[in-house]
Amino acid sequence: MTATRWHLLRHAPADVEKGTVYGRTDVPALPQDPALIERIAARLPAESLLITTPLRRTTETAEMLEAAGLAPRNRIVEAAFAEQDFGAWEGTTHDALGQEGSADYAAFWDNPARNRPPGGESFADLAARASAAFSTLTETHPARDIVLIGHGGSIRAIIATILGMTPENALAMEIAPLSLSLADHTRGGEAAGALSPWRVRGLNIRAGV
Image (cartoon, rainbow, N blue to C red; front, side, top):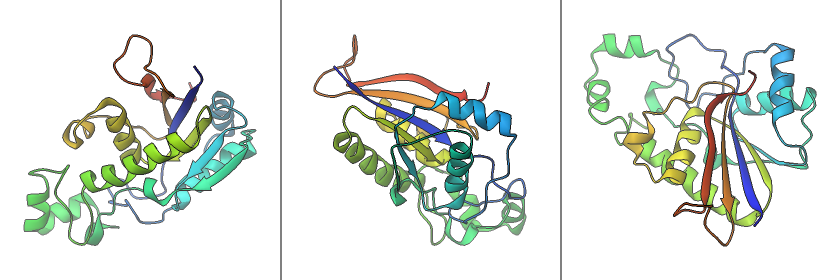
């Protein structure tokens, strides 16, 4: 059987102060060592469907990779894979929010997977929208190589969907900038030796190593 092969790459590090909450803030990606980007591009499949989000740090990462030789067959933007919206906290550092002594900020950490920042969304909200888009794209692009340049949150959500994890468990996963996670979906049957059509081939791989 021919698989649909997902290649989940987190975008390059964002150009923000360390500790800043920048989920939906449209910050740029930092320039990267061309040799590193060439190594990453070489690990990604040619003739793929390339997906980015509306946030420029994913599109700029895609542009770096294309300049380094990645040649997708086509490219789309999928808003459902955008990072979590942190509402009123966007652009503020965690240190500043903690020092303000906000009751909302303190309460958020009681259940960070399901609580919402003021005017924002929870990780569970993100997981619901990303999971729906992921399932639809898997069904509508069978037997394709799909490269998603996404965010830490959206990639955690997709892996949680594949592995049947709760949002709480998904937050335990590290998804480093420019790391690659790989998963295959076998259409019309189960992966060999598994009770699921999915086969996970790698998580949080440092793609440039």
